[in-house]
Length: 54
Image (tube, rainbow, N blue to C red; front, side):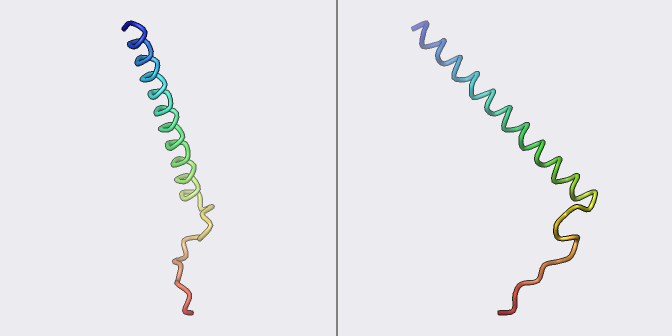
């Protein structure tokens, strides 16, 4: 029974690490995107896109 608790603890620790790494990645990517928007290196240059009239 003791080994089952140890395995469960390791599983929860692994899930925590994966979740923290995922959250850090989302924060990093969002920060980069926000900085690109603020400093004007957005690909659309602020121009609205119009649908094709085909």
